[in-house]
Length: 129
Image (cartoon, rainbow, N blue to C red):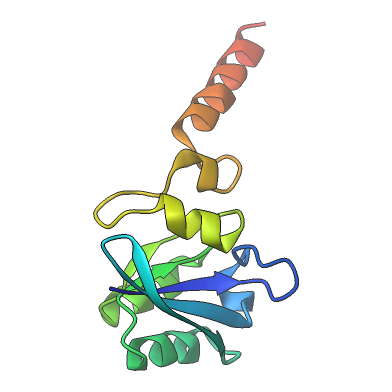
């Protein structure tokens, strides 16, 4: 399986916004074992990024936040999208499995179920006071 992870160049963490990402790490992984890994410079325009990833045979895209319109383009090109990822890209990849969502510890703040429940609970208790 070929997986692309958008990465911030200096920090080696998942790029917080797909549209602003400048590079991706392309990984070939079979049964959890990485057989190859390459860094690829990404074009500026989101649709060009998606076209490039698709042309490279990417099947899965792991990224940070992504606009709805861009996410639709990703789907139109046949890539499976797992967005709102956060953390060091290798850890995010290691914690992700095909057919599953990203682990809560690898989601952007506010995107996990527990965090959302806490936010909702805080909102309710604030309104009740």
